[in-house]
Image: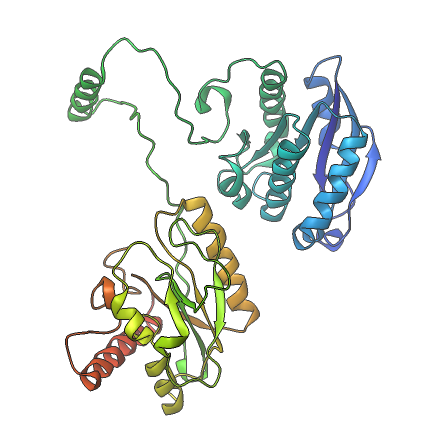
Length: 346
Length: 47
């Protein structure tokens, strides 16, 4: 069995942050964690090739990075692709996840990786493939690799995969049929009674989890601050140039309001299937309050209004998707030198 | 989170910072009040 293993510059032994800009390199045989992984995969397994790339390069040049990596994985005749584990390293997780997704869809071999639940890569890709929950501590490397190897074996042999807590992977949100002794009503009453008695029980519904997001500090002086408007009410220029979907949107747009005193009804439309948009169509300032923000800017109450506002439609959207868009919007705002944001939500 | 002091209650889902039932002048005043509340919230420590 031929394995290709992906590592970032740190685990690949190139160096720390100063080497994060390095492009993709290929090494014959196992490197670093790959040397631990190879024997865990069994005597027939061989880490034929190790790909190493700097975290910044991989994330900033994702398309070129993936194209180059896919070519090398193809020509290595790999039976299995392994990435990481990445623990809590965000850029590493994003790169490993993107690469696993590309290998899975374009080469069609099993993929295996490991990340901490809080890694943004886990958030983005956990529904697409199995990601072993690595925790944050890289000292657990051996344990994590053991779990990755075990699960990879099952995938390669098409063996049934158990529940997340049994196999150690991050829940994918899959719903599977299962034979049980008791009907739903009895199970429910058992759970209610256990809860009443203060005994442990396990819900069959996994609630959506919201990681705690630290609130940004107060803006000290708005008179020097650049303020941006964002909306999830689906206000888009006529013709919806970015084709932002009216439900479960995967895209967002930034639109110029430079030198404008107010939004004109004839310039905009609404792409949002979740509210009666007639009033906003009549006057878009009812959603994106440009007229008032311009007044406040002229009065000196705020330093400046950002030349662009950001818009998407916030409706029936999976968390993994909205988190990605939120990160992208935050990057955009940062690149424009924004100090504060007012987000209007329908 | 409902109740967080960085969250300002708007004037209904269909016109968060507007009101189709009042005059344009009154509506703009309402919008300005809501945005001034938001600016005050931005300058307050989050609780």
